[in-house]
Amino acid sequence: MAEGGYVRMPDGTVVVAMSLPRPGGPGRVRVLVHAQNRARALTRLRNLGLRSVYLRGNGAPPTPDEVTAVLHHPEGVLWRADPECPVERWRPMGALPRRELRSA
Image (cartoon, rainbow, N blue to C red; front, side, top):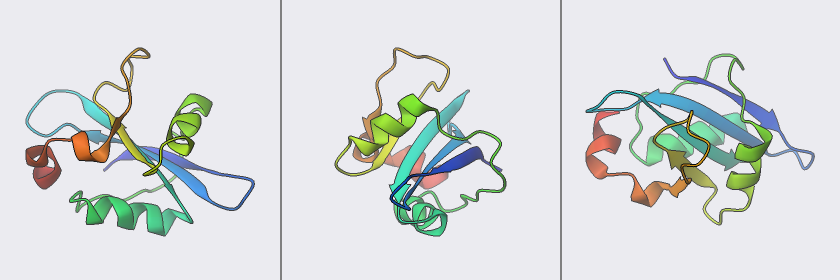
């Protein structure tokens, strides 16, 4: 199960953050999604190939820096390979290798 959470924005949209196991390697991948609601955020991830993504609870909501990053990105979907590393850059979902998308 994915660790994650969400934050409701003043305009009614949500930012969902999830830490997923990194397929094919150690560690985790942190994914951020901006959408109209939580269900649409999860649907966006499933449409990108992350089939078994579920959000239960709000144990690891996005930080203010993560919210800012995803709100300023035109696609509204970002990922980072090492969630604990503050200097690693956020990347668009198109930069996630397809092998990792299929096996997640």
